[in-house]
Length: 125
Image (cartoon, rainbow, N blue to C red; front, side, top):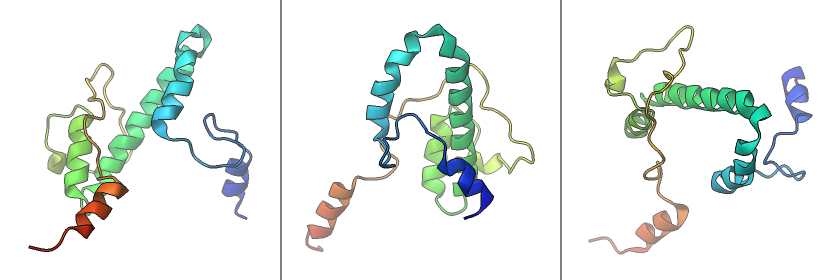
């Protein structure tokens, strides 16, 4: 096993039960909500939010050539008003600006599996 995987194998991420199965993001958020009242974890929460937003910004940039609609949707949700087509890969990524209004997940980025299956079952016109 590569050394990098060995390091991550031993980390215990919150919201990931011992069986290793991921927790649904909404349930994870609800479970973590109690920590918002613990002032000692404020810096950790701000750092986590900044890193998550940076990851989403990077995903939008990387996805643009192959999933342009997803990338544009994500870019807008991150609060950017300039078109993503004008944004280029950054050698040194820049943070999503502090105080920038980020949209809540208003609508899903992908249809649900159930919705896709229902669409498949409909007869062709």
